[in-house]
Image (cartoon, rainbow, N blue to C red):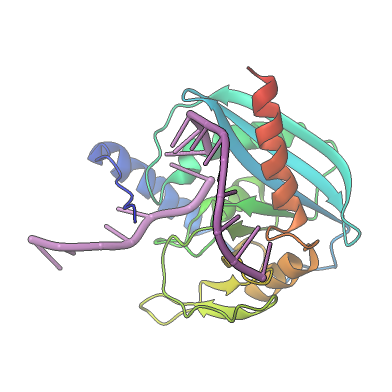
Length: 226
DNA sequence: GCGACAG
DNA sequence: ATCTTGTCGC
């Protein structure tokens, strides 16, 4: 098995970004949506080249999941990937992509983590605060916390806890016999809503539609840019 | 000191 | 994230 290795990051940069992160954290609000969403957006980024980032937004009508619009924005990569500080690398370009969306979604499903983060500020929460819009996340890999493997059947859920005993997220088996998804709220959303919408957006695939399509087009557009 | 480490 | 073909299992 392979072990991930992360090159040492400049401690000065880490300190700086971590502090900004703490400031944003004070604005996070966890609560249910005021109304059932009519539109939901999927968001994801890819890197056509090591120095270029491409961010995609897919707008879907909910709960029918019909694609209403898909947009993207390409920009320069200025920050390295540092575990726990992913948002500073991707959020700037994602925000520019968001500006191209004419119609605003009622909630955004982000590829990455929400509050299931070492400092409760994953990219979903980060984007939610900066946009002041409801967000939650769907991640394919765990970042922090412990959990018991949910049953192998579609729909099984188990809590993701951290050492303080809190529940920053849930681990969801979106399809039979596939690796589970890690879901948590970002901003202006709560766990129940995040989990409910994740399940409601399934269409037979492991990934719920918003994220699956954003993921797909992030790859399609990337090819076109070569 | 030894792991863990989103995308 | 990214580099990459075929292949095993349901």
